[in-house]
Length: 96
Image (tube, rainbow, N blue to C red; front, side, top):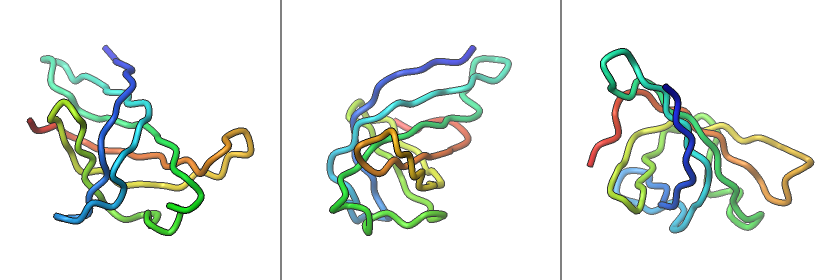
């Protein structure tokens, strides 16, 4: 079963905070047995933050509920969105 949820959190690179406050959509894909196998999502960021995130780099998303996980990011230029959109993809379970 897939689950979609809104999230709030921060984007980290090692111990460094890259983006202090992000909000977006998270989609988790469950494996047989109930564990999370894959998760994807996206968030918007301000134009002034565009240089903070490097496409293809791996970052850690830390959600306000304590879950976290490593993701690969991709920038999406979307003429519909008022701000740059960052898509992310992770595998395995979130850690608490």
